[in-house]
Length: 272
Length: 364
Image 1 (tube, rainbow over the protein chains, first blue to last red):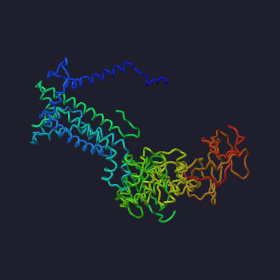
Image 2 (image 1 turned 120 degrees about the vertical axis):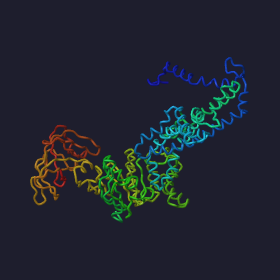
Image 3 (image 1 turned 45 degrees about the horizontal axis):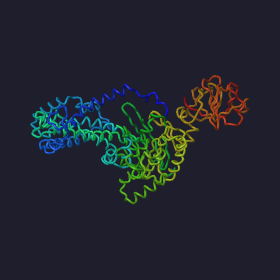
Image 4 (image 1 turned 60 degrees about the vertical axis):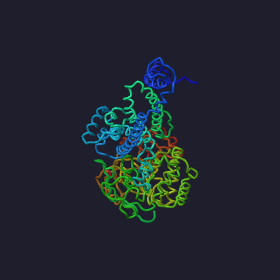
């Protein structure tokens, strides 16, 4: 074994820093699964004992189940529409000469930095003005708005990552524009599309502020959870559901990040 | 050359990108079955011209006719042309077979015929058995063949090639040049080949258009270009050349007397119209048309010089001789082992000689 090169030499302070950083990020989240198995309605130390009761209650909690289904619906629709819009926009800004391209991209990306509460209030005023009844549909519209920039950010590198001569080659071989889109463009950006849908779904699924402003009688899961905080007895099943969602989200985000990179170059890149 | 001499007609075509005239009023015709090259350094407009033919760019003005039909309103997917891209543009999500079959779907042919054509095309480019591979499992030369097969399988009237050999190493490139030429002769399709490599263009082409600043400088056969360039710019681009400034002292019955910078007073036979008494012209001489001697030769023009340096090229050397009245040394090509340079050292006096016929007179 040879000596590690200068750049690979281990650095203890940096290791310690990295460990502290990871602990800071993840230990708070670990309280959720910890208390979800604790045999007490009070969320406090010391732990009382181990139980699956909260998980059992979670499955029999009808309002929470309804909220979960609502969130899944909103997330599914928002992610599909945001990604669809993102595909067209990303294709346009990477493939065509559009006058004022930069300002257009800037405006599309703006919801990334506009505080959600402002967007929520603005959308609420708009919906009231044009007389739209608040419902899951208004929540979905709000979620599409905030998801499009994320879809664009995921898809633009995908479009930039493949040469436009691929599309020219397709046209050259006899394919019209629509055929080229289906047979070349779409297969080549497909990993990006899946990644974008997963990312948008996750964003929509845990979004609170806009959902809070725009929801009608039906609640999404984050709003339901927030409304349960006043009732200590109802909180433990929420912890159980939260733990389950964390587990699922981790898998989804990990998978989407892997897909985002997969196949961009010839080298297999399994790392994140 | 066979068939129609104006199979492809490029008629006063221009392409401007903003203020840049990428292609500027270009006019010429290409015969059917011809191997035609567009040669020039980067930015000369050769690739833009090819893309105009393929339909990827629309001309600012002018028209392209292929087999008599105007092309400017015809979309790329409806043109009788196919292209081999510089980076090959092989679809990475499809295997070799699917890449080859990609365009056949639009030709409305039977599935069995399609498979037969794919097999034939693979045979033709010597890739039989590689049908199931993906582009990332192929070498550079193999990708080049796939791109070629994918275009030829469509049986186009015209094959457009955009520097297809540029990414290959020298040895492979030379192999592919021979294959490409053999293939073109076998299929008999008109090839239009874009390259910046003058050697490649000379090796492959029936005719070459030398381009610069969006215009064609000269369109001629390789031999004609080499032996009879029309301008200093073309002569600079094709092969190595010595240029000598000269002024015309006298012209009499096809013989011109020239006062040169460095070669003294010389005579050259010419019928070119710009060679008029009192004009400044340029005399061009190929290094291989110059000889080295240790004493002046009788009956030949010559000039005395000092051997400066030499570049060994294997089968021959280029010897650089500085002569009085000239800043740049004369390049003289000397065969290895002929003895004419053998005993000469740097700094020794030599005589550079040439024959009258070797002189090419060019406008200043």
